[in-house]
Image (cartoon, rainbow, N blue to C red; front, side, top):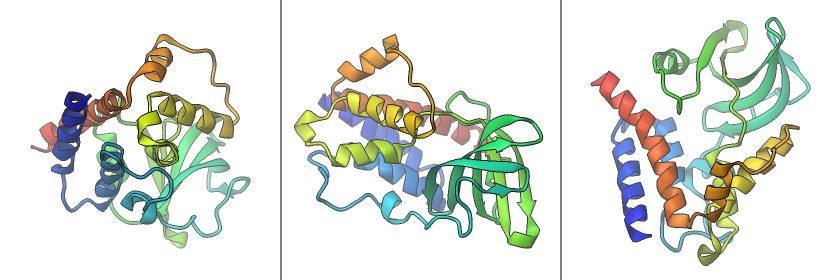
Length: 219
């Protein structure tokens, strides 16, 4: 278990070296690192920086509303720079993950240059100049976020944590979006039975691979 935890910690440290000035990356990676701290929060302690720094819901936007070519269905999450919705793109008749943020930066264009199974594919972006908003629409990948996992971790005593926390977070997120979770697959069975140190190592590896790609391309 200690070996798994050490490997995971090294993976997170490596990823944090990518861009020390990228606040969004810092928030996301700090959240993951909180998962590997021995004896970390169990529900009554302080929250990770990524949660504390989360911005309020984008003003005037909520499920049931329409923005440009998109019907907003479910709020999937929110962060320091915007909100992400499960949305229906009207013109194409498809479900997408729609990130709505302030119109600044080139994150959608940057993400679109990378091709990796662990990096969500960006379809395109739209700028709503009159509202000062940037719409980035991407492949919808159901299953929730690391924040969902972190919330369950903080509510579970350290000695009781296993990989089942991950599958429970996935199921709850999919049910929230009105989707069927299906029967247990071999992956789900292995994850449920995995000790917590092994689980966080698996998360670290999945994060480290796409970040390594970013380093290679940028370098």
